[in-house]
Image (cartoon, rainbow, N blue to C red):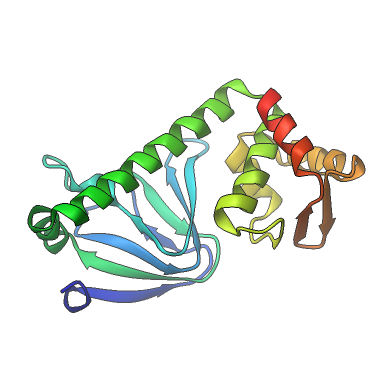
Length: 202
């Protein structure tokens, strides 16, 4: 049923998938790629999450009384998104309790991650914020202690709400301390317990 009421769209790196405030006619499923979900601001945007492939997006637009996207989404890498008709999605929620239960779990998990992210941004020092992002990339995005980073230093700056210069300086500190290794775009977490400690202490 979903296959019959959805289309696949390819996006280039840096393209916008949906814009905050625009009409929400579909739910999105990221077939492949990596995107950022963010609130548009002036002068800086607030990044809510970085989302890897095999994840649903736009679920917050499902509740009655709202028919617009609450955030914008743009791509970090070339991505493929399945656009699913939102009315069909609502129909499935009403007809299939198990499906609805799974969607509630997904929404709750996203809310929990957002709480953790806001705590990091508002309560932790710069080293703790960057440690959080590196651990998140390792554990939740790439599921490896070594990965090629598709994000620029400017992207990391936006994610951690610090200056690009601070990101570069702290990355160098972590490398000099033997906690991470950096080789061009490749990053390896060498000492995860120490990185966990920096994250915990903020």
